Image (tube, rainbow, N blue to C red):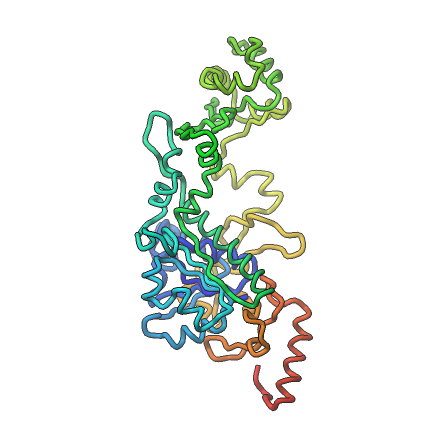
Length: 434
């Protein structure tokens, strides 16, 4: 399956997810390279378009093609003819001016699936408004509930709006591909940053629609009022009143720190929920005498859901992640270095996830150069017609596309399919093509 990735940082994670699954994702960049290459931090602190850690993370397993869409329309059209999916970002007006709106590309290639990630969707009164991650978090309700009770709203760590929108785009693409297997038709996957954030607000929306209650900022307190972060002697830990309350209060009482928590009223979960501030104030004072390791180990013995709050250096050394090989070493030949990357967010028993190559240098992959192993670009035919089984790549070479969709390329049955096509072309006199 071939995917053309023309998305900026708002949709870059979508292409990465599909590339890591085995799709042939071509990152189409303007002359000079994608602007995301200028986003830091940079390798060893030295700025450079091929040294951005940000770009590296979001573009593993992709290839790069430099193309000026304003001047190279014919070349882009030929490339579009080889694609199964197009991923773009921008408002409807921006996409139309670049010739990337769904109506324009679908008119040329009806089987194409277009995933468009935009601030507010492809229609509505604000569809042409600009936005960014923090604006989407604000207008999607995420900022309002994030922060401490006595403080202002806080933005979330990282690009949460971009991530959730890109995830929705990737899911939409996979579903649209499945529909295309039956219908032969492509479609538009319209993803709004604002709507993606609203859809990820967990209990906030449901609580309001059921009771009219507006959720407030709670700091480290979970909305169930059963979990909160506390400070131990040497770090932070997530403590909880959930689980076996009797075991917890007996433990705290044995340390002489329970105060009134052994009163009968605290046995009731709703009472603990209603008086959570006092409960956690007592627990905060109690945990200060422990190290994180000792507290969590003792809680586990009592089947209490306590957890250490880990920093990145602790994550890298975590035995569970190490046992499953989560962090992956990836070779950068241009640096003569092997660097470590986050690994798979999911695992398949039959089709293993893997990083095949690091993010491409500018233009790397245009002619099979230097980017390591590349996908074969095979995928569905789109409209189901026999004529589309043979398509041409952007360099003019014919390529075969199997009607059986598979992210990792064609299945073994494709070999027989290819032989049948060769026999038909031979019989029709079209010898020597493909």
